[in-house]
Amino acid sequence: MGPPDGRYLLRELAGEEPSHVLVLSTLPAPVRRFPLGRRTRSAPAEPEPATAPLARLTLVDARPAGEDAAREWLARAAEDESVPATALAQVNTALRGYRAAAADPYVRDLAARHALVCRAGYGAGVEVAEGRWAKAVELKPSKDERVRRERREAALRPSERFAALLSARDAVLACEELVLRARLDLDQGRQREAALQAHLALEAAVTELQAFRAERVVAERLATLEEHRDAAAAAANEALRGGLSEAALKSTVGAVERVEGALRARSAAAPY
Image (cartoon, rainbow, N blue to C red; front, side, top):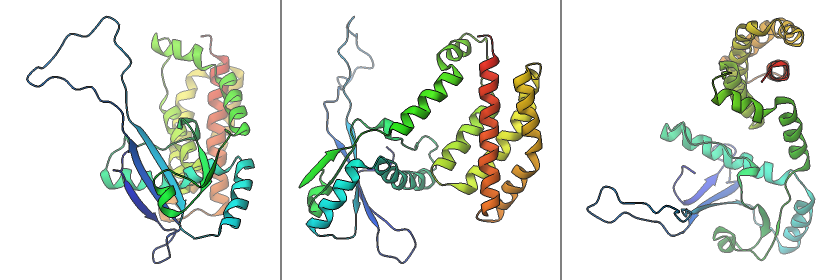
């Protein structure tokens, strides 16, 4: 995960009361160790699957509530598909802080699909900090997210392109990496970073997609990218000075969507 196990207080603003407590814990699992004094050892032809510990993240509302209020909240949470995303936004804010504090680019943001199980529940403070509950439910994955992912995969043909990339019949474009980072920043509410990444992604796309301009659908998308360059640049400059205005945020979202659309068009037209 990155941060060591422990309990961390989360505040929205300095000087305010804590809003949440983030509890990180590692559930033990058997760990294989090499015998002392040997650098290597023979491996069996059919080794058993390696075991690994599990990380458990618990986000606790720091504001006390009575049992009746907690019961009502749990009934709503069980039917609200946004609950996991809302909790993960808090977790990812903490992970972003650790990523910067440790200067470790490999500390990654999390998505709901990375979890083996996601639960919501209530209990006494000591209970929930140790992963126990008075009552809890398992939350269902978001239907909207599944539908979006299925549509995206249908448009991008990832299996076919993955094979083309591995066989060197295609190459990953710089704008693809940049727009993915911009999309992640947008999804996580990091608007300034999104504006800067979106500007770079759009400029890279305008240059890199010239090689595919012979495809009509790509040429049409390129025209929309070129029309949006000034707006994306203005949003990035505004991000350097501070927070984004509503207009700049709209331009950033537009830049990301235009680059994503151009890349989908390029993927759909590619003869993999």
